Image 1 (spheres, rainbow, N blue to C red):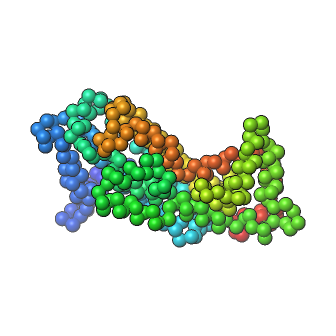
Image 2: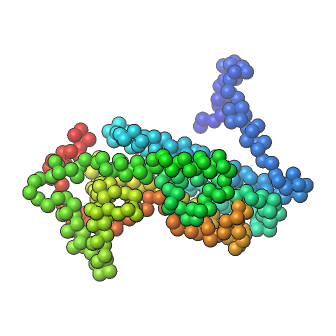
Image 3: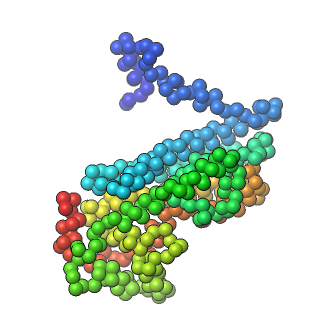
Length: 352
């Protein structure tokens, strides 16, 4: 197994240890990292043992947020050039990096296990010393939400969202509103999918989506009658309250229904990765909510928020890719799918 010890030993054996070689503590800047825990309770001469744990956990969160932004930012850059090459592996890289983001988010959820070894009484030993600092001031998490696609107007408690930030940080968050989000770039990517264009389908027949609409409406059961109108809203007419266009939704549903076609396997995995991230962020918010309730009950947060009530509202309303999840409402059995014309089958080949 490769370890840092092997690197050190091999270098020593070759007689190459010099002051210019990479040295583990220096490479990781451990003097800065391990010296960055300044306890407020110690500054006030009222040492609180669990404040060290509180600081280390939150510093670890911020480091993971930095890695998530690194991964998500690279995916956004891939989509921002308006050309994602399925044949050249770009989409595979995007899927891999988003799956890494999801795995990191899972780790963030599990870190709550460590936080909860601190009891509410332990927390009270130093909690009031932290005011008005709050996790609500985490710039990196706000940047992440904004880059993924959570616009200011869609936020729960938007009037409070930037009120606790320093002016320069508030300006930075507001400037992100001018940049394209991953959700917007995914919409454009889906709109560029060519396989539903009329040139691929026989003339004189009902369009593919007209065929799908008939099949879908025929499959509705009692209590789902309103879904017929919802189909029209999502796939035909569009709506100002939706972020994905009808064209993008048609492409996404086509990918979902025909995901077994080789060319659609990676696009399908990409859409699934977006849903995985939404689910993981919701899980983190939910675990955070429960931890806050356990620690402070119904008290207000140190930053002045309503504590549990605010976190509950954010958890319920801050889904970013929920419109992709909505499309599962319109799936039906594979055996009912209309066969693809030969021209479309040919176009779906990787060598087309």
